[in-house]
Amino acid sequence: MGLVALPAQADSGSAVTGIAIESQACTNVCFQLTVDNPTAGTITLRLTGHTPGGGDDWVDVGAPQVTLDIVPGQTSYQACFGDVSQFIANKGFNSLRIDIVSWTVPNLAGTTTKSASFTCTGGSGGSSAGGGSGAGTSGSGGSSTAGAALAATGGFEHPLLLIGLPILVGGLALLLVTARGRRLGRS
Image 1: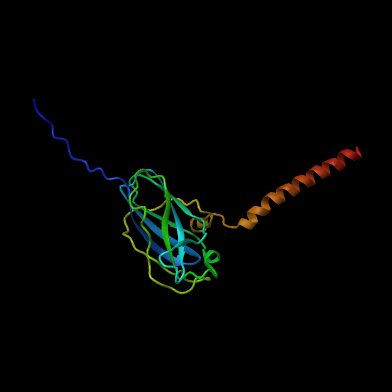
Image 2: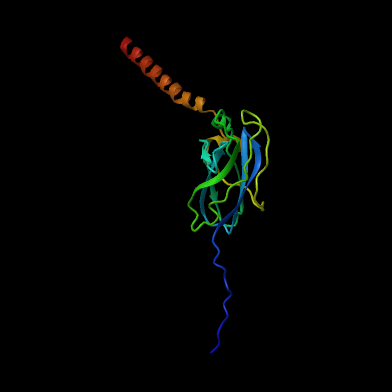
């Protein structure tokens, strides 16, 4: 009898709309990723470098990649690569850039989005250059799986101490076993 008009729905999936550099200090390269219509998944980013005469070739500098957990309703994510000085030192990079290397967000558009090129400041990175691009929106957070980014979130970032911990525990276990063996041998 009567027809009911259904509201038209735009079938727009998630899209990366910007990667803005927030800190270009070599000791803490931080950025903001902006995603429109976010759906659950992850987006992994990497730091790339360009050398003079390298044409349009940008290569992974080798810094630990940063993976962000994307959640519905949150359009802005901040994260840091941590200290990248050791990864760019003496490599001849004249500029750096952040791009997307992988994602699990279904039907993600904008996967070729890149930050503006920049030169990190301080450390062995050189002098300052231009900042990043991309629109900022509300929201914050995101998580990083990159070990180097832990310093920005108050995490523990001393790999040599972490390597020494199992050695210390093993040494104590050996000491206890040896002491117990000596005690049993006397009785």
